[in-house]
Image (cartoon, rainbow, N blue to C red):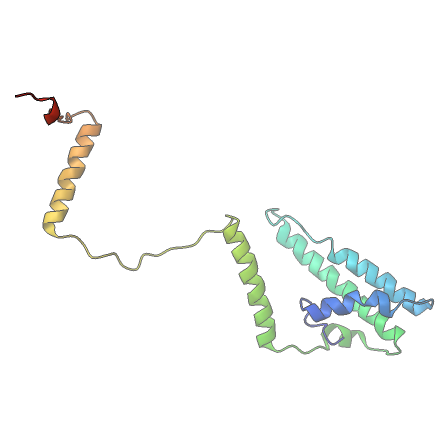
Length: 174
């Protein structure tokens, strides 16, 4: 109950994984808890897998909705097994979580998934050039233009590349 609004925390996961130990017994209510936990655990381990699936978001929304239903059913079974009779509304909406905590959880999720998509090549960084390095002088620009034009003419076969042969001084006698 204490972690029901923070389902991604290690404490919540630990509490869920302790259900098998805490409700190990022969009573019907213990068996009802374990049965509900088994169904919920199976659901948690079988979510939509392929984010590239065109219906992924729709499937994920349905999976989350069904997960909420199964989780609240589990809470109801646990409450009854320990002698509490909570109203359904309390189980579904009776928790408190500050907006900052919810935002933090959401931001961490978005950062993790975004970074994974970026590193996996599915997401690209948007880049806006804000400034350019200082420009070259007019003389340097003219020289670069002249070199570029000469190279283009050479590669297009319009200009020969001059070759100068220099004799090696060691070959010259006299």
